[in-house]
Length: 244
Image (cartoon, rainbow, N blue to C red; front, side, top):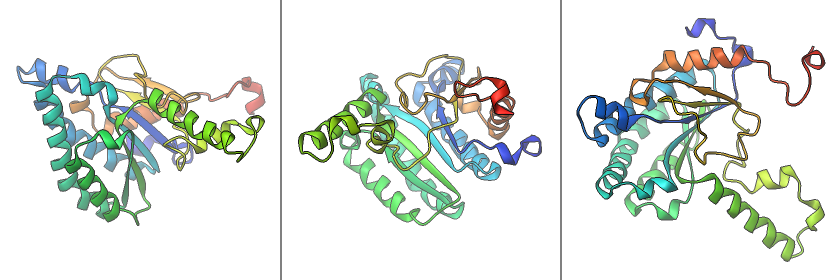
């Protein structure tokens, strides 16, 4: 399916809500952590697929601030899985030219997680094929509030007047300031919600929903989503005739 993709119309940034690990595991009579473990293979597949297709930025919604409210054993298992996965995958990411970034309230993560993330980001810092952005302990509402606090502090300090606040100023204070806004957002497992994910950045993204659970999501599913995106007309408020 990769050969069907128009390389001139590749989205610069794809964001994915990786949903359905728990349902996938339940269908197999296993606990939720079993699904999360198998979802790691899907991450590897999608990262490789993005590199092969020429996507330059990929954001994965790995753990939301709301996920801290899940059962303690699941949260602990997820944190341990995160540490072991980053440790195993960091070298492969580097070999594939993938640079790792992390966004979210990182202070809330266990120290072991932060240490592994710091090491992996340092190891991959020189890579240029793909920016892989993990949203960990992330909430779009939290991000918007934090950006607002930063801008308010600048106004209070006299750095610029309130009238100078623009869309660009606001974007510069978001955690994704160094990346273009996502042009395609994919959510797996059949849910049709954004779930507090990149609310500001997804304003003009094309939304793609699939019933495939995340542990079953592979390169071909990614390419199908990209092809669907390429067949849409992106007007940004204009009419079709203005795009000719």
